[in-house]
Amino acid sequence: MVPGLLLVDFLRDTCGLTGTKVGCETGQCGLCTVLLDSVSVKSCTVLAAQADGSTVTTVEGLSPDGLTRLQESLWEQHGVQCGFCTPAILLAMTDLLSRNVHPDEAEIRAWLDGIMCRCSVYQNVIRAVQSIAEPVR
Image (cartoon, rainbow, N blue to C red):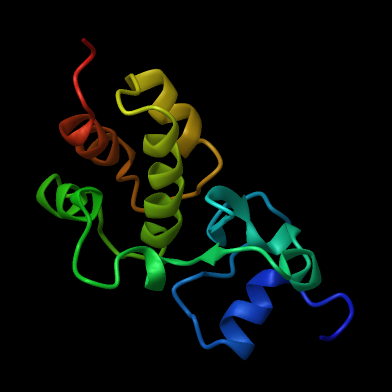
């Protein structure tokens, strides 16, 4: 493995997994978010060698057998527009929902805070996540 190779570059250039986007390359925009051992991380801040032996999930591997409930809800609630940030949002919200099955609006917003969306679909993403979140009992 090339020393200093970033995980985002390895995924895109070596593995051909182009769903992971390159944005700022400084960890600010969040467009390169992937799941590393089920935890959402910005792959431009992780060396490929650091991920060796870990499970890396990109949007391509999120649901190999069809759409997840979250993907369906984002579609239904118009939580996607151009789609550039959609992979990052999907992976971050998947991580959130794995930790908390009924996040409130403030928590969803906090998890979206590190992902830049120029189309500003944030409110629709919040609605989509809330529509599939399990009710508090």
